[in-house]
Image (cartoon, rainbow, N blue to C red):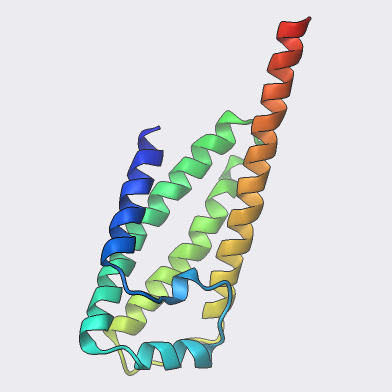
Amino acid sequence: MYLAVLLGLIGLVMHIWGPDDELDIKFFYTSVQANNFLQGLSASQAGAYLLNEIMDLLFLSTYSLLFFFLARRFYFRKTWMALVPGFFDLIETTTIIFLLINRSWAPPHWLGYATSLKWTTGIILAITILVGFARQLKQASNKTAS
């Protein structure tokens, strides 16, 4: 419960203070698109984006813990798999932080793939947790009906 509230608060702060557009919310982008986006940022926009990415480190840590505890709660045999989306997000976020600090560097070609893997594994994990939750609800209602 606390993690969900913290996640919501961090997300709200990131939404309010963050830039209007960012690489993190796209499903996929090429290194050319990422480079054009990052080079098009003004100094103040890059600073706001950097602050947002630093907040994203806290955000991804929080949702990773939440996913881990939910996976444990709804019986996953391999709960470590709940950390996979956060791992890809960590790669994405730290790379973007590095690129914002060192504005002369071009984004690596794999950055968009890390973002895409973050979203794909996160969606799969969320669906799997929901299925586990539904299964437990069904088992509980079967026990009470017996």
